[in-house]
Image (cartoon, rainbow, N blue to C red; front, side):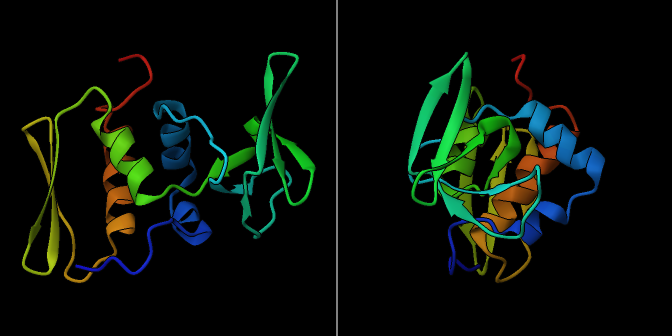
Length: 143
């Protein structure tokens, strides 16, 4: 059980196969906020940025970053924090996060249980749980 970092890294996002990645994108309810960390998917760079501001332009959201640079929200992917992952997992669901020795335990909707590896980072574990629930169809925007 570890809590060394509270934000995903790009490599964790790209550890997903393309179908899993698309499932997460289609399933989650998340709105970017000032201060969020993200990377640009199109065109892809391996750099991370912080949201400095968000503007609406012609019914689309534009992310302002890096001293005034702009990118459409549809071209970015947030690097979720522990807090944002917990928020997404608990949105409209019963969600319980516990510790057990050197492991994390998640109980989702009283019937889906997940246990981390020993010393696994909490953010990595929650990302795995979110991905699995999205792929299995237990989290979706239509709920």
